[in-house]
Figure 1: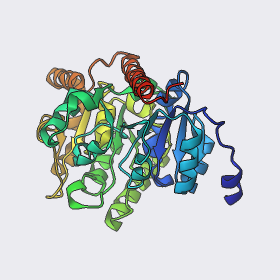
Figure 2 (figure 1 turned 180 degrees about the vertical axis):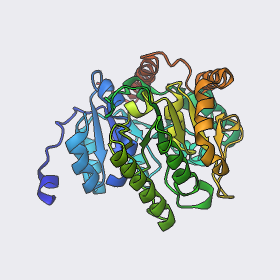
Figure 3 (figure 1 turned 45 degrees about the horizontal axis):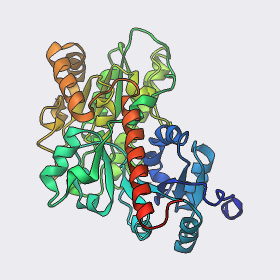
Length: 385
């Protein structure tokens, strides 16, 4: 591993204009993976490179990322890279404390793009103020920030781009097209503090999966968060129980083809399933961007913070006590006209125009505006080429 890290080539000097800064370890690669396709599209116009600060993440990124990756573990190597390149925009996808090591460099825009849209407390952190700009999804995100952040100029420092990832939801499901109703259950992890205890695997998951497996007319796609069970052993046991139940159901009826999904790519799971069941996480909004039916599990933890001013105020909630009635609830969100109309209204509010290519066009327009603004400031300071 050390040899690979030492010998991997760096981009040619002055060849990088946009960087995606990722300081986390391999366990959080899901955060950057969702940006692969949009950044590959951006790279057709502007040179894009991922900066990795972790050796395990860098090795994985070299194998799978569609744009160049550099490993810069030390501050000295980071500084040398900045000095050699023509960086104009640095994108940040999380709030890692080591982001501050990159913030020290001026003459470039530091832009927060996050790793999903949601109504978690994370989405209104005062850390937004650390960035020059933030690219946000839509009116709901803007209103959320306006309610929470004091003395923050939303007009000047945010741009609404929708959900460009939704333009790249690809892949082929590992099961045939048949008359089964496909249900994606994509819970989050248990969280590391009471306010973020949104995970449903132990409280809802076992019963709802058992209920769907028993019907003979549903197909379950179980996609747990990769960190499920890292804090709570009971949560880990519930996760293993669901995985085992899926294996037993497939052994009993091979035609069912239920799926325990651990793949890195997220596309067909959102775009091609009939109903989704999610926890309070970015997965809600990944699904919402497709305009397809979903249920949201209500946390059982008393301290879990739930946004009261957005989609979650009006969501199709799944209470823990209702998990045994999951079949009836799935049918309601799938076939009720009222549920369909409500869903359509919220899709527009969170993401604006979701027609194919619309969000990608807004992302590219935002980047072009930032590049133009960089040129203005660089010209004033004698940096422009």
